[in-house]
Image (cartoon, rainbow, N blue to C red; front, side, top):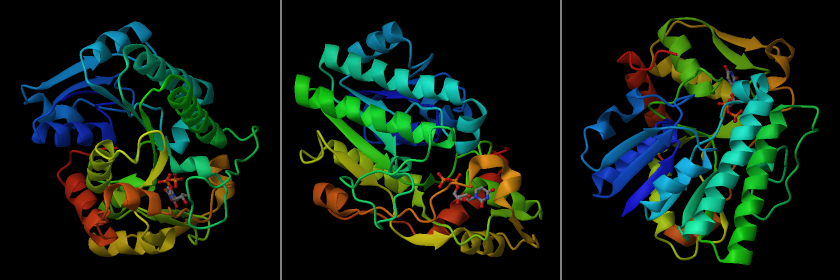
Amino acid sequence: MKFLITGGAGFIGSHLADALLARGDAVVALDDLSTGSTENIERARGHASFEFCEGCVTDGALVGRLASECDAILHMAAAVGVRRVIAATSASMDVNLRGTQTVLQTADRLAKPVVLASSSEVYGKGHRIPFAEDDDVLLGATCSPRWSYAGAKAVGEWLALSLAREHGVRVLCMRLFNTVGPRQTGRYGMVLPTFVRQAIRDEPLTVYGDGAQARCFGHVRDVVACALRLFESDKAWGTVVNVGSDLEITIDALARLVRERCASSSEIEHVDYASVSEISIDEPLRRVPDLSRLRACIGDVPTTPIEHIVDDVIARVRTGVETA
Ligand code: UDP
């Protein structure tokens, strides 16, 4: 098959491209290189079945032309990272809303199946752990730009599911939980690449608040494997599916683990939320996926232990490829 991957030079999109090429599929990667990079697609570029197109996912004519040559669309393009969303809220909402609308309208017009990358942010401040796909969502106030990302992703899901119901478009929404691994940049505030970079430089590890907040970190390799298996699962189409790991760790424990695996002498510094602007004041204390639906669709879910994930990220940063 030939896949159009929007955001194909991004963190997750480029890993998807590598996996598809490795199994013999062809890939067209569309990316505006705003957060993606040509380094991410270095390996893919050596492949005869790979094409790269620099452009924006909001360009309907371009998306239409590329999609018409492909069998399916994997829509991964988005303005990501809490820091970026807060710094440029209207621009990130534009890409996230209009980009998704462009992709879905194209899929509808050309009758192509589309996989949509949504986010666990959609659960917002929900406190019924674990989060199941049909749970109510609890977003923060609109005066807090942080929640604009969740709002845009939720609207994208509504659009997708309504097109599936009303026009019979084949859509699959993946709610991705914290995904980490090689190629993820710390530039936009993501915690694991930030801690690893700090530990390697023996700088203080900046834990926000008391570090009791917890997350489940999924290796990008596992997330990609789940995405490809979901694509093959008849049960997944027309639904929303949580994708990620359900192994929980507090941010404080993550900081200690990173320091230990790096053999670093870094201090662990607890940074007051107030001094990191409104990024985290309002953040969810826990975020754990209910993976029952994912398991019902694909069977066993690969979950690489956090120690191995941390080692993979350290190895990548140590090679100097990850500079930010
Ligand atoms: N975090 C932290 N220090 C940092 C960056 C993030 O303590 O330098 C915390 C952040 O407050 C959150 C968790 O790490 O509780 C995960 O943050 P990330 O931005 O990676 O993902 P999020 O879960 O916010 O989408």
